[in-house]
Length: 99
Image 1 (cartoon, one colour):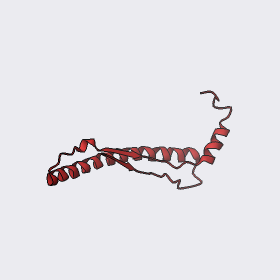
Image 2 (cartoon, helix red, strand yellow):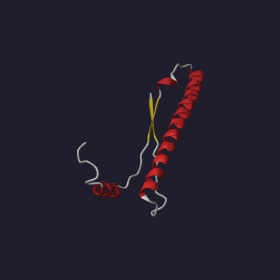
Image 3 (spheres, one colour):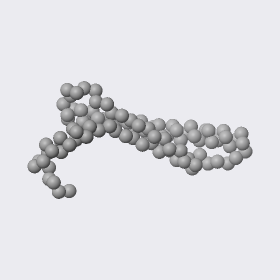
């Protein structure tokens, strides 16, 4: 039995006038915080599913294993493609074109 939980986290830029580096730094910090929250959420969901499975097993005389339940959390981030393209174009000559 597999349960997939999609958690969409959207990073909305709060201020248009914020400097790009400061904004990127804030987004990075928010992304790190979201990663920590996702780990805690995943653990809490697995614990909840263990209790639900145990309760179901005791009431229905079954032997389902809560450890077989898979919890996936996908994190998505909204990006500004126009800004990304302009940053790539601005870095031409500064950053190597070769990988």
